[in-house]
Image (cartoon, rainbow, N blue to C red):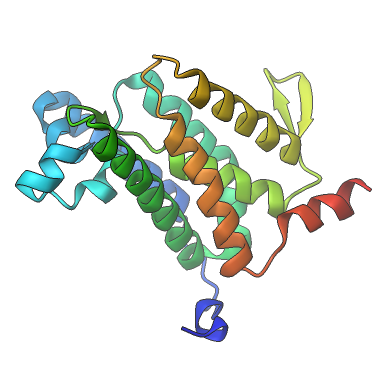
Length: 212
C-alpha cells in the first residue's frame, strides 16, 4: 500500500464524536451494572476469544469498565483531550484513530496474556485509547499546559513523558494493581506510529521546535 493511500485525508467533518464515544461508554457501563455477568461477553479474555470466538471483544473491551471511578477518570481524560483533538483532525479521522489505537493496544495485551498463560484475566477499559488521545493532543498542542489538581501547570509533552515513565516502571516492577500497564504503553507506541505513518508528523521534532 502506497504512502498516498495511507495518508489520504478524510473530508473534514465535525460531529461531536467524542461525546458519542463517551455516551457509548456510559451505555455499556449501565448495561454491565444492570447485568454484571455481561462483562464476560464485552471485556477481552483469551479463553473466550480462542474457544468461544468472541472476536468482538477486541472492540467492546474498550467500552467496558470495572467500576464508577474507572469510567469516570477515563471519560474525564477523553473529554478534556478528545474534543480539541477531534476538532483539529475532524471526526472521521478521530474515530479511526481512537478505534485503531484501542484495538491494537488490546491486541498486544491479548497476546501477552496468551503467551504467559493468563487465560482468566479480563482486559477492560478505554485507557489504552485515552492515553493515545493524550499523546496526540500533546503533539497537536505542544505549548498547551495541563493543570494538575487545578494548580500545577505541566506542559502536555512533559505530562506524556511522566506518564510513560510511570507505566514503564510499573510494568517492570510487576505491580499487582490490576492495571494493565502494557495496554497503556501500547497506546503510546501505536499512537507514535499513527502520527508518523498516517499523519506524517515527527513528534520529537514538534516538541524540539516548541521548547528550543
